[in-house]
Image (cartoon, rainbow, N blue to C red; front, side, top):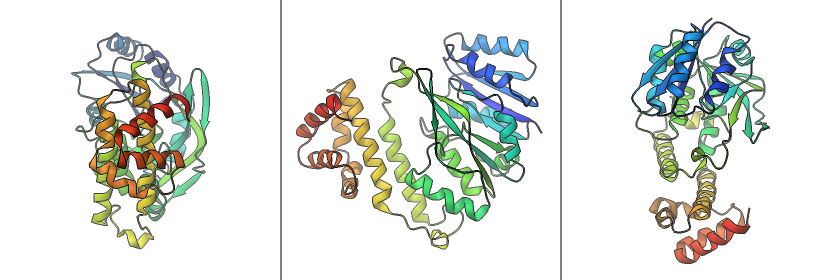
Length: 336
């Protein structure tokens, strides 16, 4: 059974060799590697071509810059394998990943593995306790729906720690939303799990997710992150209100949206995000924009179970944004 490995590439000359080498050294050899050079301005495109000259399993596509969603979609459209894997070009995978993940796919549409979070040459095992499990259609809906709504499983929304049955992807016309700048893999997986008949999971970690050096531009605060979170929350609410998120009535699987729990994670993430902006630039216009945003202010009614210092900052945001910004500056210097 052939596996198509899709890697979008953009200005990653520093990381690309390690990533590609980890694929080419797999214990399972029946795969093709699709490198989608998304208009790189460094030597990444040339590096891709060199690999294609050395190994006939490597195919290179040179594209005008259109973002990772477009690159991945082109990879899907050109894949010739039976199964599909996505890897970020600054990450790498364990030598046995393809072989072990393929074993999980015998009766599954999607297989999920654990992963390591890598920082400064330290690999931290991300123990999400997924279990070595096989979920049928009812189990998929019941087990994973809450994780999407309540962020209960880190890595669930990512596409890089999974293997997909390509017939399942194409038959259901699942693609990445090219209009999204961020969280495009979250919605790709949301659509996948909404249609999957079976999912297999393993506690074994085969993927190495690189947390790049803090001096890297890849690690800087993303300008659009808050807008993406708001978009995701609103879209999830819309699908919940339609009451057919997983093609069944949510009541039939015993799901009732806990709004306090739903918004709690959002409010916590926003507070940490604002703190990171303040630490980087206390005069950044985004601080006032977020703290005065109507959606954020409406969510504050659900902050009851958040840590007390975040509830205090939320209170200040409602009463006096200038004072709130001052306390965010204090927190950014001293608190955790």
